[in-house]
Length: 80
View 1 (cartoon, rainbow, N blue to C red):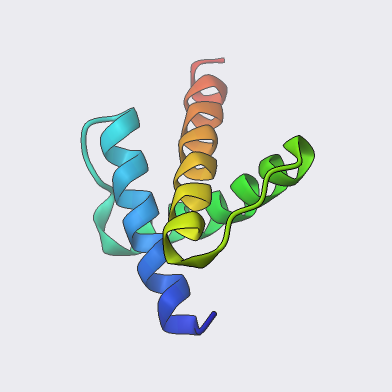
View 2 (view 1 turned 45 degrees about the vertical axis):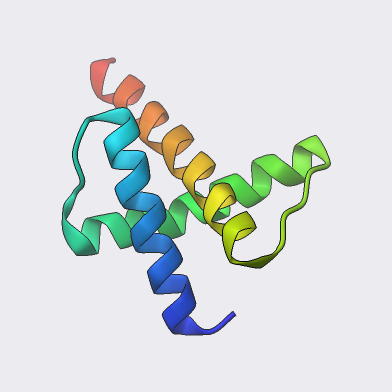
């Protein structure tokens, strides 16, 4: 995938995860950061479960799941 596609998927995944977890986004740079790190987390989790996804929608789902998990972990660490 190209760099622009990574930024688009990262931004969308971060925005979606922000809406799911907190009811709002984190700004464009925050959304992209959360989405890209979430894509790495989601890819790792999907590989552990033996799942794979392809294409734009599959990448977006993987990144969103990973971003939601990332935000959940961050919220638990902040409470501790």
